[in-house]
Image 1 (spheres, rainbow, N blue to C red):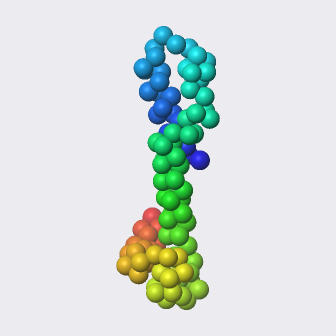
Image 2 (tube, rainbow, N blue to C red):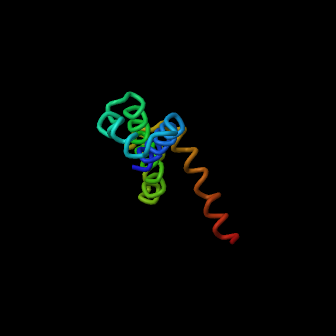
Image 3 (cartoon, rainbow, N blue to C red):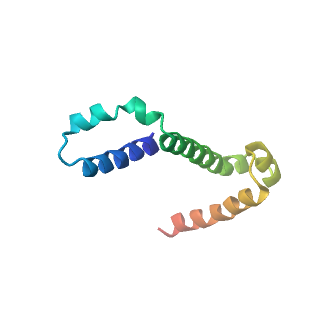
Amino acid sequence: TSAECGLLEIVETILVYKFPRMSHKEIEAMFSLSDLKQTKVYQEGREEGREEGSLEAKLESIPRLLALNLTVEQIAQALNLTVETVKQITQEIPSQNDEKQKK
């Protein structure tokens, strides 16, 4: 995922600066990808990325569920979100449509 790639790029940049006299291949050999995937930082970053993706998918589905005439409460229950979160998203929907019409 993009979160994993971003984390790997950051780690790679840090290693390059920490070991300026080593070649890219030497650094890769020193820190194999499988070792990196076992680190707590990598695992936490991966889990955070999954959670963000899951939340984003839920939020993007709210307008479609509203179009099916579900209530805010039904949507909140179905998506395991708070009613307040769903209400906030529903309030943002008309403003997005208004902006498109102005263009």
